[in-house]
Image (cartoon, rainbow, N blue to C red; front, side, top):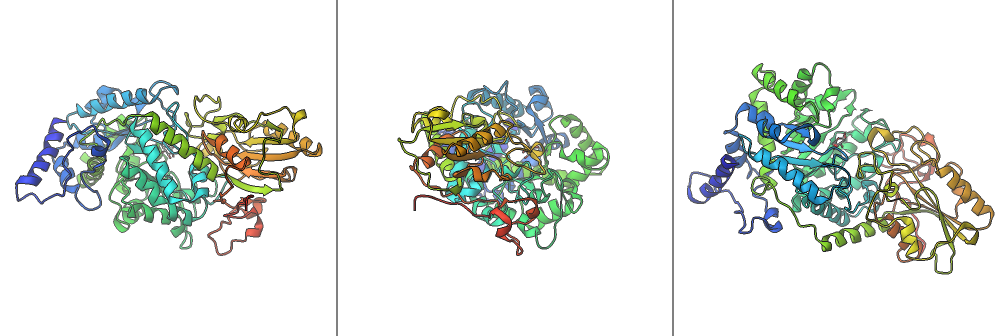
Length: 612
Ligand code: GLC
């Protein structure tokens, strides 16, 4: 760190007193280096060249070994502090659910872990601090007792740039209470098939939503001290429901998948994650045409590209060859959770063999260092934002607003609003389960099945704030809470995702039977579905007087739905995916000229309300 800080501070001083160094419009470190305001004052901008001087000056001091170390990201569980130091590791990640000890670790335990790793990096020969990255894709979802926000599918339904910005800001605050400064979000997958297990990580099927939200999603992170990631480049949402599959791309649909990245670069996005998937049979991680020539050269991306988790192992050849292919294609940092040490040595060998040029290494490290300088990591490598009660309350209130605004009223026959005279019975697997309302990437990679949360408002909690719930026989209204069980990535790929197949919770079956009984008993039947995507409803919709798609609203989902059912708020949500009637509409999405809304049960942007 001494060499680094000396360099950086020397540059600051030089900028002020020696003419030959070009004047760099630099914000000097604040008097109170621990203040958030100071932390937010970015010393330079990677897109206007003001970080170049700092990065080049530091790059010129590094050995080949120190440079290669910067290009390696390892998983926290597979490296010691001494190894972080001796290998000059540039970044560490927590994979989904990779806690310091277990899922009950609070923000302080996370911060203590991050500081340990950071201090090891600062004591390395280069002294360059490391970037710690996580998938905080709907709030800082790994950390116990942190508010879980709605997933991106819900944000696409709201489709409000201001609320998208507010979500990024809140997530940035959560991250900085743990000292983490890099988020692998937002996902810019323009998803064309709801059979994909990552449908809920997308805003929806139409590029117009991404054109409306991408800049706000990124800016909210950048303004509040977080390095965001546009992922997964390119056309990960075009593989027609097959995770890590192949996208058939042509002149018609290339722009659909590219649209969000044009927004991202306009917002000066600092990092991009390459996609596991292929375009027309070409693996993204090995494609120089897409990574170097399109993203960097043509579109002007000035940040750095990180590979996805072990993704280069899917390329042809030996590990050595996979490293050569991906780095020469334009990957700047390798996400090698386990094989980081061999990646390090193979990359050095590749440079010595001139299979990877020193020029390419320097370009990659220059890009990485620029992001580190801009993110203030160099001046405040262990910054922690206090996690105050006011902040926690702000997050809960925001989560409630987002949950309320992202539910979609699909069917309504004069049942709402409920009032104190209604006798309500609640049933179904999601009636009292924060985990099912939150989906994948929640406390663990594949989500939280055990409902082990110490926060939030379940549907039962929310309804109980409005009325005393009664047993079936005493009721005149039955609320049925249906759900998918949580999943992430390929574990959610389904050929026929429905209420009773695919990832559907097995208890949906008896819940639907109860709904049918309630209907035949003359009761009012309200269905609420928690899912990561539209599901085939088959013939079940007829059973319900009212049917609501809540998708994945997060830990305050119960509050939002109770507000809507009891008339405190009206529905405003509009579908960000076309809701299929049957499989005949596979492949038809609303941006296409041939789109026929009549082929769907509910078309793109459908959503009822009941107050006006
Ligand atoms: C995963 C995902 C990617 C995530 C990364 C790190 O496999 O594809 O979205 O950021 O690994 O967890």
